[in-house]
Length: 248
Image 1 (cartoon, one colour):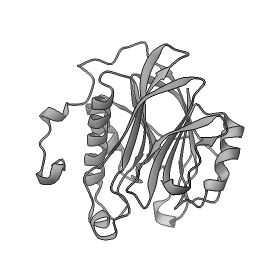
Image 2 (tube, rainbow, N blue to C red; image 1 turned 45 degrees about the horizontal axis):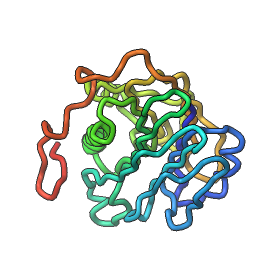
Image 3 (spheres, rainbow, N blue to C red; image 1 turned 180 degrees about the vertical axis):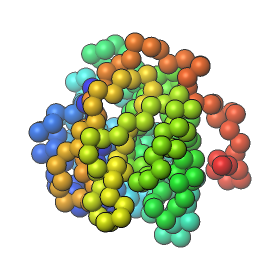
Image 4 (cartoon, rainbow, N blue to C red; image 1 turned 120 degrees about the horizontal axis):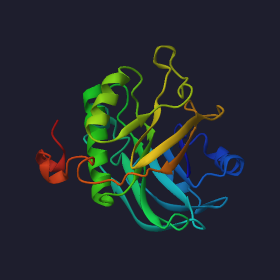
Protein backbone atom coordinates (compact mmCIF):
# COMPACT_ATOMS: atom_id res chain seq x y z
CA UNK A 1 0.00 0.00 0.00
CA UNK A 2 1.26 3.45 -0.93
CA UNK A 3 0.24 6.53 1.08
CA UNK A 4 1.30 10.11 0.34
CA UNK A 5 1.25 12.79 3.04
CA UNK A 6 1.56 16.45 2.12
CA UNK A 7 1.32 19.71 4.08
CA UNK A 8 0.09 22.20 1.47
CA UNK A 9 1.31 25.32 3.32
CA UNK A 10 -2.03 27.10 3.67
CA UNK A 11 -3.29 25.48 0.46
CA UNK A 12 -0.55 27.02 -1.72
CA UNK A 13 0.49 23.64 -3.11
CA UNK A 14 -3.02 22.44 -3.97
CA UNK A 15 -2.32 22.81 -7.69
CA UNK A 16 0.30 20.04 -7.44
CA UNK A 17 -2.06 17.30 -6.29
CA UNK A 18 -3.16 15.98 -9.68
CA UNK A 19 0.44 15.58 -10.87
CA UNK A 20 1.43 14.07 -7.53
CA UNK A 21 -1.29 11.42 -7.86
CA UNK A 22 -0.46 10.71 -11.51
CA UNK A 23 3.29 10.44 -10.96
CA UNK A 24 3.24 8.23 -7.86
CA UNK A 25 -0.11 6.38 -8.08
CA UNK A 26 -0.87 6.35 -4.33
CA UNK A 27 -3.64 4.26 -2.77
CA UNK A 28 -4.31 6.95 -0.15
CA UNK A 29 -3.53 10.69 -0.03
CA UNK A 30 -3.43 12.51 3.32
CA UNK A 31 -3.39 16.31 3.35
CA UNK A 32 -2.68 19.00 5.94
CA UNK A 33 -3.21 22.78 5.73
CA UNK A 34 -5.69 22.50 2.88
CA UNK A 35 -8.68 24.73 2.13
CA UNK A 36 -11.43 22.17 2.57
CA UNK A 37 -14.01 24.39 0.84
CA UNK A 38 -12.02 24.15 -2.39
CA UNK A 39 -11.22 20.44 -2.32
CA UNK A 40 -12.43 18.46 -5.35
CA UNK A 41 -14.31 15.19 -4.87
CA UNK A 42 -11.82 13.42 -7.11
CA UNK A 43 -8.06 13.73 -7.68
CA UNK A 44 -7.20 11.36 -10.48
CA UNK A 45 -8.28 7.91 -9.29
CA UNK A 46 -8.60 9.10 -5.70
CA UNK A 47 -11.93 9.90 -4.04
CA UNK A 48 -12.42 12.23 -1.07
CA UNK A 49 -13.21 10.22 2.06
CA UNK A 50 -13.83 13.36 4.13
CA UNK A 51 -12.22 16.52 5.46
CA UNK A 52 -12.33 18.65 8.59
CA UNK A 53 -14.97 21.38 8.63
CA UNK A 54 -14.02 23.70 11.49
CA UNK A 55 -10.38 24.33 10.59
CA UNK A 56 -8.71 27.32 9.01
CA UNK A 57 -5.91 24.87 8.16
CA UNK A 58 -7.83 21.76 7.23
CA UNK A 59 -7.11 18.03 6.94
CA UNK A 60 -8.37 15.61 4.31
CA UNK A 61 -8.05 11.99 3.17
CA UNK A 62 -8.47 10.59 -0.34
CA UNK A 63 -8.54 6.89 -1.23
CA UNK A 64 -8.79 4.64 -4.30
CA UNK A 65 -12.34 3.39 -4.68
CA UNK A 66 -11.19 0.49 -6.87
CA UNK A 67 -9.18 -0.90 -3.94
CA UNK A 68 -10.96 0.30 -0.79
CA UNK A 69 -14.42 0.73 0.66
CA UNK A 70 -14.75 3.59 3.11
CA UNK A 71 -16.47 2.21 6.19
CA UNK A 72 -16.26 5.30 8.39
CA UNK A 73 -14.35 8.58 8.60
CA UNK A 74 -14.08 10.69 11.75
CA UNK A 75 -12.38 13.92 12.79
CA UNK A 76 -10.96 14.56 16.24
CA UNK A 77 -10.05 17.59 18.35
CA UNK A 78 -6.85 17.11 20.37
CA UNK A 79 -5.41 19.03 23.31
CA UNK A 80 -4.95 22.67 22.27
CA UNK A 81 -1.78 24.72 22.44
CA UNK A 82 -1.75 28.43 23.36
CA UNK A 83 -1.29 29.14 19.64
CA UNK A 84 -4.51 27.26 18.91
CA UNK A 85 -6.42 29.10 21.61
CA UNK A 86 -5.30 32.56 20.50
CA UNK A 87 -5.20 32.25 16.69
CA UNK A 88 -7.64 29.31 16.30
CA UNK A 89 -5.98 27.80 13.21
CA UNK A 90 -7.22 24.29 13.92
CA UNK A 91 -9.95 22.79 16.09
CA UNK A 92 -9.47 19.32 14.62
CA UNK A 93 -5.92 18.03 14.29
CA UNK A 94 -6.70 14.47 13.29
CA UNK A 95 -8.86 12.78 10.67
CA UNK A 96 -8.99 9.01 10.37
CA UNK A 97 -10.75 6.67 7.99
CA UNK A 98 -11.53 2.99 8.42
CA UNK A 99 -11.15 1.22 5.08
CA UNK A 100 -11.86 -2.26 3.83
CA UNK A 101 -8.98 -3.33 1.60
CA UNK A 102 -10.66 -5.25 -1.22
CA UNK A 103 -7.32 -6.60 -2.46
CA UNK A 104 -6.21 -7.98 0.91
CA UNK A 105 -9.71 -8.77 2.26
CA UNK A 106 -9.08 -7.00 5.55
CA UNK A 107 -9.62 -3.64 7.24
CA UNK A 108 -7.15 -0.87 8.01
CA UNK A 109 -7.22 2.60 9.58
CA UNK A 110 -5.35 5.45 7.85
CA UNK A 111 -5.11 8.93 9.37
CA UNK A 112 -3.85 12.42 8.58
CA UNK A 113 -2.37 14.26 11.58
CA UNK A 114 -1.17 17.82 12.16
CA UNK A 115 0.53 18.50 15.49
CA UNK A 116 0.66 21.82 17.33
CA UNK A 117 3.20 24.32 15.92
CA UNK A 118 6.75 24.88 17.14
CA UNK A 119 5.57 27.48 19.66
CA UNK A 120 4.15 24.61 21.73
CA UNK A 121 6.13 22.24 23.94
CA UNK A 122 7.24 18.83 22.77
CA UNK A 123 5.35 17.38 25.74
CA UNK A 124 2.09 18.74 24.32
CA UNK A 125 2.83 17.24 20.90
CA UNK A 126 3.59 13.88 22.54
CA UNK A 127 0.23 14.16 24.31
CA UNK A 128 -1.47 14.85 20.97
CA UNK A 129 0.25 11.88 19.31
CA UNK A 130 -0.64 9.52 22.15
CA UNK A 131 -4.26 10.69 22.19
CA UNK A 132 -4.45 10.43 18.40
CA UNK A 133 -3.33 6.80 18.57
CA UNK A 134 -5.94 6.09 21.24
CA UNK A 135 -8.69 7.70 19.17
CA UNK A 136 -7.71 5.70 16.10
CA UNK A 137 -7.81 2.51 18.17
CA UNK A 138 -11.40 3.38 19.06
CA UNK A 139 -12.16 3.95 15.37
CA UNK A 140 -10.75 0.53 14.44
CA UNK A 141 -10.06 -1.64 17.51
CA UNK A 142 -7.24 -4.09 16.80
CA UNK A 143 -6.84 -3.01 13.18
CA UNK A 144 -3.55 -2.19 11.43
CA UNK A 145 -3.17 1.58 11.60
CA UNK A 146 -1.03 4.13 9.78
CA UNK A 147 -0.93 7.77 10.89
CA UNK A 148 1.00 10.20 8.69
CA UNK A 149 1.34 13.96 8.67
CA UNK A 150 3.15 16.98 10.03
CA UNK A 151 4.36 16.05 13.52
CA UNK A 152 6.21 19.38 14.04
CA UNK A 153 8.92 17.54 16.01
CA UNK A 154 12.33 18.58 14.63
CA UNK A 155 14.54 17.63 17.60
CA UNK A 156 14.74 15.05 20.41
CA UNK A 157 13.20 12.36 18.21
CA UNK A 158 14.87 9.68 20.33
CA UNK A 159 12.57 10.54 23.22
CA UNK A 160 9.59 10.71 20.87
CA UNK A 161 10.49 7.28 19.51
CA UNK A 162 10.66 5.86 23.04
CA UNK A 163 7.18 7.19 23.88
CA UNK A 164 5.71 5.86 20.64
CA UNK A 165 7.33 2.44 21.10
CA UNK A 166 5.90 2.20 24.60
CA UNK A 167 2.42 2.68 23.13
CA UNK A 168 2.94 -0.25 20.76
CA UNK A 169 3.51 1.85 17.63
CA UNK A 170 6.53 2.16 15.37
CA UNK A 171 7.99 5.54 14.33
CA UNK A 172 9.51 5.77 10.84
CA UNK A 173 11.42 8.76 9.47
CA UNK A 174 11.71 9.62 5.81
CA UNK A 175 14.96 9.10 3.90
CA UNK A 176 15.77 12.86 3.88
CA UNK A 177 14.52 15.97 5.67
CA UNK A 178 11.03 17.21 4.82
CA UNK A 179 11.00 20.85 6.00
CA UNK A 180 13.02 23.71 4.55
CA UNK A 181 11.60 27.02 5.76
CA UNK A 182 13.64 27.85 8.88
CA UNK A 183 17.42 27.47 8.93
CA UNK A 184 17.59 26.17 12.51
CA UNK A 185 14.52 23.93 12.33
CA UNK A 186 15.08 22.06 9.08
CA UNK A 187 14.60 18.37 9.53
CA UNK A 188 12.18 15.48 9.52
CA UNK A 189 8.81 17.07 10.32
CA UNK A 190 6.62 14.72 8.26
CA UNK A 191 6.58 11.27 9.81
CA UNK A 192 4.76 7.95 9.91
CA UNK A 193 3.64 6.03 12.99
CA UNK A 194 2.13 2.60 12.54
CA UNK A 195 0.96 -0.58 14.20
CA UNK A 196 0.27 -3.94 12.56
CA UNK A 197 2.18 -2.88 9.44
CA UNK A 198 5.68 -3.29 8.05
CA UNK A 199 6.95 0.03 6.70
CA UNK A 200 8.99 -0.82 3.63
CA UNK A 201 10.10 2.75 2.91
CA UNK A 202 9.33 6.42 3.54
CA UNK A 203 10.52 8.40 0.53
CA UNK A 204 10.78 12.18 0.48
CA UNK A 205 9.37 13.46 -2.80
CA UNK A 206 10.63 16.54 -4.70
CA UNK A 207 10.06 20.03 -3.30
CA UNK A 208 7.10 21.99 -4.67
CA UNK A 209 5.57 25.30 -3.61
CA UNK A 210 5.08 24.22 0.01
CA UNK A 211 7.74 24.58 2.69
CA UNK A 212 7.15 20.87 3.38
CA UNK A 213 8.16 18.10 1.02
CA UNK A 214 5.62 15.33 0.45
CA UNK A 215 6.43 11.87 1.74
CA UNK A 216 5.49 8.54 0.15
CA UNK A 217 4.99 5.71 2.65
CA UNK A 218 5.06 2.17 1.28
CA UNK A 219 3.84 -0.53 3.66
CA UNK A 220 2.66 -4.13 3.85
CA UNK A 221 0.53 -5.88 6.39
CA UNK A 222 2.49 -7.44 9.22
CA UNK A 223 2.23 -11.18 9.86
CA UNK A 224 1.54 -10.41 13.50
CA UNK A 225 -1.99 -9.44 14.44
CA UNK A 226 -2.70 -6.35 16.51
CA UNK A 227 -3.98 -7.49 19.88
CA UNK A 228 -4.56 -6.25 23.38
CA UNK A 229 -0.89 -6.62 24.30
CA UNK A 230 0.43 -4.09 21.79
CA UNK A 231 -2.30 -1.53 21.23
CA UNK A 232 -2.35 1.83 23.05
CA UNK A 233 -4.16 2.15 26.35
CA UNK A 234 -7.91 2.51 25.91
CA UNK A 235 -9.63 5.83 26.32
CA UNK A 236 -11.26 4.51 29.45
CA UNK A 237 -7.84 4.37 31.11
CA UNK A 238 -6.95 7.95 30.13
CA UNK A 239 -7.79 10.77 32.49
CA UNK A 240 -10.02 13.37 30.92
CA UNK A 241 -9.71 17.04 31.84
CA UNK A 242 -12.71 19.44 31.83
CA UNK A 243 -14.15 20.10 28.41
CA UNK A 244 -13.20 16.71 27.00
CA UNK A 245 -9.46 17.41 26.74
CA UNK A 246 -6.97 14.77 27.76
CA UNK A 247 -4.72 15.61 30.68
CA UNK A 248 -0.95 15.21 30.35
